[in-house]
Length: 329
Image 1: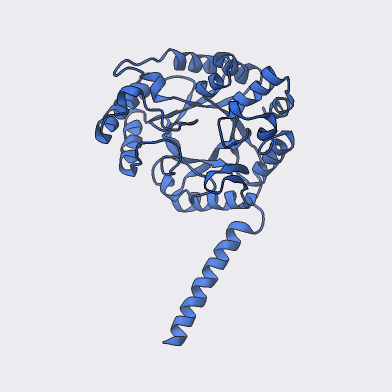
Image 2 (image 1 turned 90 degrees about the vertical axis):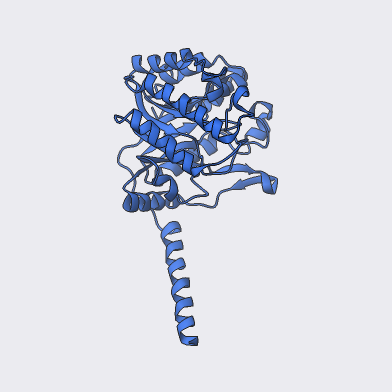
C-alpha cells in the first residue's frame, strides 16, 4: 500500500514537473509573418478629451492600421430601450472599408474598456433574465445590420466574460453560449469568438465556445488585491505553448486581442501623472513588449493603447511611442 501511494505521489509530482517545464522552459518557434492591429474605443478617446473620430481616422490613415478591434458599447448603441443608434458604427465601418481595413466588432454587455460592462441606465435595474433578453435583441440588431458589410472581419461576443473583472452585474457561461450560438446563426460567413485572460487562464473553456480565441498579453499592471504594481513572471513560451495546446486539443486559433501598449494605473488613466504612467509604460517598455510578443510565436496582435498614443502627442507633444508603433504597420 505504501509503495502504491509513493508511486502515485511520484507520478503526480513528475507529471506536474513536466507540465511546468513545458509551459516555462525553452522557446516557441517564431511566426514567419505577423499581423499587427489596434484596439479602439470612442469612450476612451473621449475620456482623454480627444475627438474620437479624429483618433480613429488617424489609426487608419496615420498609423495605416489594417486590422482594428472596435468596442461596441451597449449603452451607446441603445441608450434608450429599442432605440438603436448606429450612426457612429456606420461611420467607422465605412471609413475602414474605404481604407481597406478589417474590423472585429466586440459586442455584448461586457466590451473593452472600463467599466467593462456598459449597461444602459434603463436596463441597469432589470432582472438578469430580462437583461439577457435585451442583450439578445441588441445582438440581433447589430449582426443583422453589419453581417454583410465589406469591412467586417469577425465578431467578438463579450470581452473576457469568464474572468471576474470590471463592474458587472453577473457572469453566466450558459448565456454566453447562447449569445455565441445566436450570432453564429445570424451570420455564418464570419468567425465568432470570445476572449479570455492571457495570464490567468488556460483558455480551454473559451476554446469550446467559438471559432477562435482572443487573449490578453500584459507585462506589468496594477494589482488591486496587493495594492502594488506587479510584473507577470511569465516567459514568452508560456503563451506559445498554451496556444499550441488549444490548437491541438480544440483545433482553435489563438491570437492576442490586447497587447499592452499603454499604462495600467491604480486609477483612471486621464487622472494619472506622466510619472505614474511611466511605471507601467514608456518607450523602452513598449519596445520590450513588442519584442516579447514576437517571441511568443503567435502571429496576430492587436495593440492596446492607440488613444493614449495620440493623447501623448496632442496634449504633451510626445510622439515617440506613436512613431515606434508606426514601424509595425
